[in-house]
Length: 253
Image (cartoon, rainbow, N blue to C red; front, side):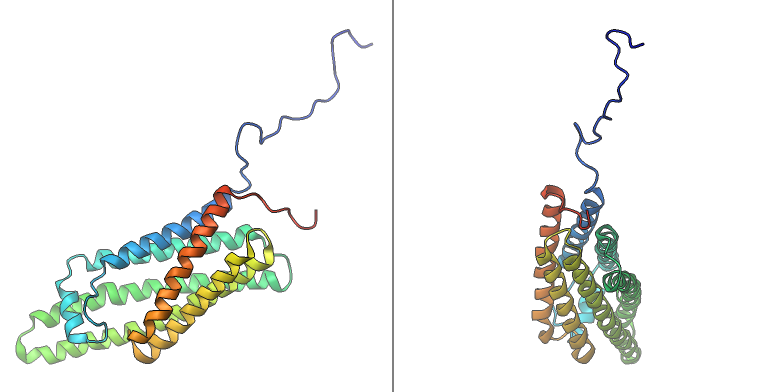
């Protein structure tokens, strides 16, 4: 018998979203924040990098590197920036949950390429930020009879840097192209962000080819600037979309 004033009917559970922001976008916000923070840190570190001399003028460049008191710190910051950017790409690939089939494999290969790009960048910074610095310091203070040998050592390390930078640019370019393809196919965020990522990847492929063929020549200026501008645009767009945009409807529901 039902008592007056007593209601045993089930009540709807309180909405988890009432009074608090939805947590569904938290991983996307993490990805966007990591990517933008990595780009910003890389730009700041790049501005502090000693590069007033022509990079392919090795005597002038090596002398400038030897005078730099923050060389190792700058390269550590550059590595941290790349690590943040790559982490953002990896989180983004997980967040987008690419559908099965070819798109899922694209996401997997994109993640592998991103991790490989970070590993290559770590090796690159060890060569450039540590080995080359010691080599140019030794060349500057070497007695005159030993200077030629010391310079040859530093130049050999420089050529090794060219090779590592070339292949790191190739692999990073592939990672960006594949990630861009996943962004386009997932329909979670604007597909234009994916297209811009892919264009950034093409810019890095061009950088890799030029550095491998000519070193740090003037021919690499346009691909380098294009890569910087494109990353700025899509990382800011992704950041704004993640923090202030609305969730796209999930397909299949």
